[in-house]
Length: 288
Image (cartoon, rainbow, N blue to C red; front, side, top):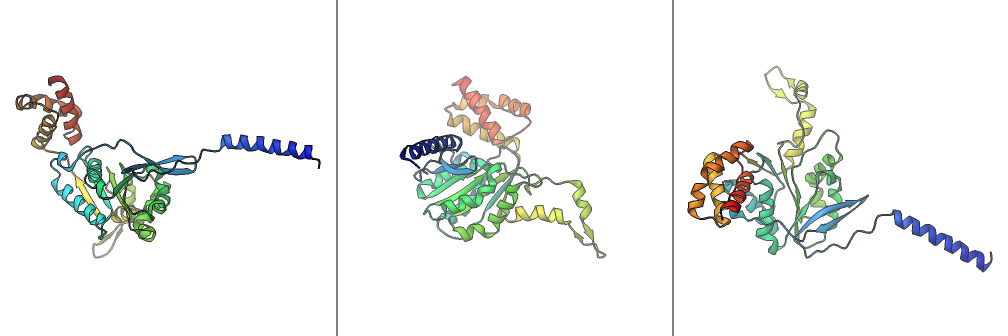
């Protein structure tokens, strides 16, 4: 082979490589470990921790009428930070009652002490093992946060989460916990037909079928369950008044907002902290 032939072959190879590079996804960016919060991003088969620059800020004192839930998750998080035994947490119940806000409040309270938050979408739950491995050697303490978590039959993320909760976290490093919120207590749909598999013993004892047992087994792997309930009318109004005061409304304006605040929640069919804050923003914008 002549020198000219070799040069032609190299030039062709370079063109082929250039075309291949155009089809390949770019390498993931370096992780900014100085950030307090991250999102797990995917591009093709590659995943990486994307630093969140503007973190939604909410504090424990902003969350009203969930004192028991606040105390429990705050205690568990402090134990985790101090490298004491701590539990994964599942928060279930009424929408808009402060489940996800409570997790963000933990970051606001303890971010300066080494707590970090990683938000993972339900569709990426199959990558939990990779995420745990990625942060296992870091000195910070990481909460993997899964918001509005639920699974349909046969989803891959179900087994990945079950594996992590069942002890894989301890094997990879003890600097990770999972905090999840869901509207389903057992994270999966439950059907009347599943009860047909129940076994009735002669002594009257009932044993659930295998399908029901499988669904319950996932939620039972969370060490702490926190339930959230719809607010009473007076609780809802207290939350409205709190946010109106935070937004700079006078006491007279706050007192005058009561009728509209009740109409607002009737139109939405929900008395929740989220609805209360939405009304307060609207009222404050019109009266300040």
